[in-house]
Amino acid sequence: MTLDAMQRAVIHLSIEAPVRIDGLDVPSGIPWPSQAIVRGDAKVPQIAAASIVAKVTRDELMARLAIRYPGYGWERNAGYGTREHLAAIKKLGATVHHRMSFAPISMLSFSFDDFALNSES
Image (cartoon, rainbow, N blue to C red):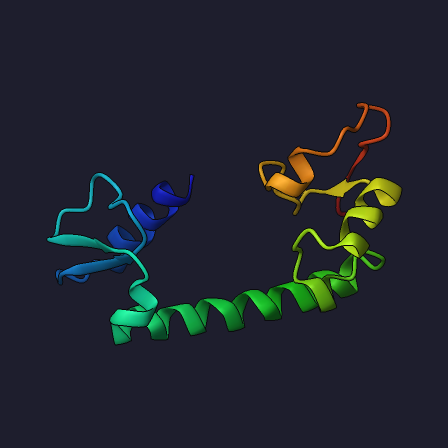
């Protein structure tokens, strides 16, 4: 899923330039020279800059979601599996914005009845 998103993002940019990716794998289907660099954010200035932009953007998104879905503590935990966040999921259920594949969530034992999906209304 992440590699697919990266591939779509790179192709959507339509900038024919070498692609550097922080991690182990290069997404398939990128038509330009590409290189995966482990710990790339510490080695390549462009990857470091992209990491900062991504973190700031994610933090802003989580702050907006915290207003829309109070009780999950997203303004403090950014959706990570903190005790507060996991307790809120158990109490309130998951929203359409929760990623079910996130390990702390997927490892919890919920019955289907306990895990009601909240949607935007």
